[in-house]
Image (cartoon, rainbow, N blue to C red; front, side):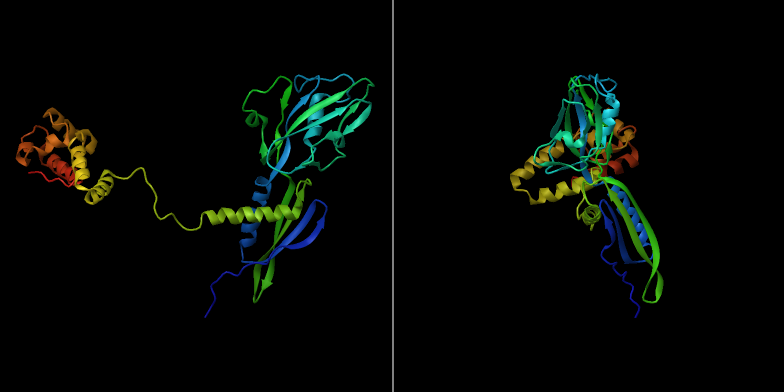
Amino acid sequence: MPDFNIILPSKPMIVSENGNLGVYEIEGLYPGYGHTLGNSLRRIILSSLPGYTITTVKINGASHEFSTLTGIKEDVITIILNLKKVRFKVVGDEPKTVTLNVKSIADVTAKDIEVPGDVEIVNPEQYIAAITDKGTNLEIEMVLEKGLGYVPKEVLQKDKVDIGTIAMDAIFTPIRRVSYEVEHMRVGNRTDYNKLRLTIETNGDVSPREALEQSIMIMINQLKAVVGFKEEMEDPRLSNSALDDVKAEVKREMPTEDKDLEEDDILKTRISDLDLSTRTDKALANASIRTVGGLIRKREEDLSGIEGLGEKGIQEIKRALSNFGIVLK
């Protein structure tokens, strides 16, 4: 008897790992699943891995990003672009504040940034600016925040910031690039199974292997969330008849005194709440019948004499009253 089960692939294998660059393979994928899995993982790796980056800076002597600083080779825009390249590893999820304060002639790099114990600079050699005058002091305060993907400064800057505080576009993702390739491979007698090869390069915040593991777990958790169906779904568009059926069932289970209260509520129900046609609603209004209590005092032959009602309107009224368990006399 043929086996129609789709076989499971192998666990990821390390092809090579060199610093922040890693290559991994997954073998034994059912035909077509190489692209299905490869494209999904690539999108998750690029968009869904969290990271820390600088979101605001305050540079002493600069009121805005188009300022120039005396004794500094670079203008403020160039300094900000260089700060964007500085990467951090941070323990926890809360925003962190780090500072830079250099007072002598020097090439300022990321290693000159003063950080707390739960913050590590991944690329301390990153160039920031050059101080060219002896009496110049480069003082910068930076706020680090955690996030996903790319967020423009207009989104981050929800509230007004202090004068001199410059918001920055935030590139939170720790991924520099990721690509995948799919090759055919033999499994048993078939040669059309897939081998998936993933190449991942990070900025050092996470290792390539951690990036792959995190992306796989994100995919698993997303799929787990949609397994099965909700047994009961509350639909705000439930018809009046369905709602009334529920009311009738509740009423049958009520104590006698509660039933009496329920009956009073029914009798006070306005005709306009019965969802009758406009023609029938208008005919009853013209006959000064405005509640269910007033309606059930009438016999069927009495309603027949109401102008504009007709047989079709009477049948419509009967259906509406039946939802309350009421029958016309």
